[in-house]
Image 1: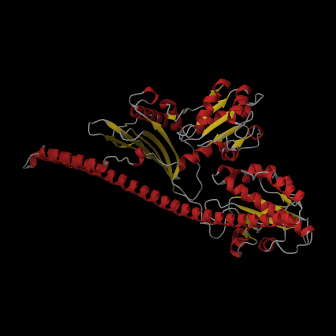
Image 2: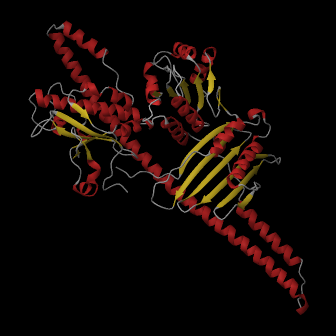
Image 3: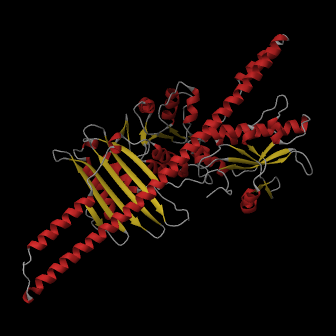
Length: 576
């Protein structure tokens, strides 16, 4: 496992803008006005926004940039607030551009440069909500808002058009009001929508008629039940049933459960997607004049002006002029020192950003290699299963066992689909006769927030079925080996997990230092050691694992496999 990648960029959103956004002729001025109001409220003082460096207080510093076209018209602005605290340096940057050759765009970045190893919590800047509220940008056919747009039955067709719009770049969050008034549900939706503002379009199916009309229009598989919330990604295809699994759905039972915090993941998911979204060409190509060079030229002009205002020959009587010159040069040196210090600080943060990006690139390459390995293993397993299926069908056909062949074909057609989420995995656990899951449900369901969740959930289900098949063959089929041997040399009819992704023990060094992390609940509530695990991903930030205990046979055996943990990779000696 690689150690978790620490990205300095903790939040980003990009909004489309144009010269006539929200009916305004000058959205750049609107951006500056909103940013200025945010600063004024934050520091309770007026902060200058003109081009240059502006110290606000002992820990905060504002840098403002502007770019102008050849005709003198401003076409881009950047406002960067840096806050130095004991725990970290925080940098909030707003960049807006309205070029002639590309569509305009506005980007809000929040960066964190920690000074300690302690974990820090970051939140979405409220500035984003203010910008969305004032600019009212659009994403294809959809208007971006801070709160959900009400959808009545007669407006459902328009909502479906928004979902299927090929020009849409952002997710769409659709919530359906429950059948009965639920204050907790309403509060959670009211808190979720603003947190997703700018990262997704927001809609609220207002009543039962709207929910029914939406189900009729979008189809059974892509629908939302009363009280549910669904996050629709781009390229929605209502006519294709498998597409529905891409768009995460939360039912009213979880949203109305005081002990369930899954509702927080709705906003976190679209915020994560915003971080991963490619940047528009207008932002990638943007460059601002060098403020450092401008400052140097201004200092030179000031020094030349000071020299020209002083007498060529000094005598004892012009000591006042000499003092004035010394004072002026001292001030200029002080300004130059501050600017050099600020430049050095910017270089330091740029180096940390570059190191973070390099680390992320290496992690992405490792993830790609791991996914390629997973695909190859999946193809090998699929090829083996298809060959086995063909052999068995041919055998039944040669023996004239047509009814059994037809029954097998029908059973295959009616087999349930692979779970698309860990929530679905949990709903099916009762179907596994020889498996007892004592794992923390909240940790497992937390994996659903990640882009790879569908793959991880499918592999988890495959692994649990393999463990169930092993326990069945061990107790009823005469198999006498362990799970690793079972997967390596499976008996006829067995369901197995790729043996290369099965580990029955941890290293001694890992257990000596981190063995306490591998103690999980047994059937009687005691904590027992579970070293054996299934790998759901080879590398990456999370590299999820399924830890289990083979309690099928032997002394005090229960005839079951206990699964004590499903979640991110636990700490080991290779974790930094």
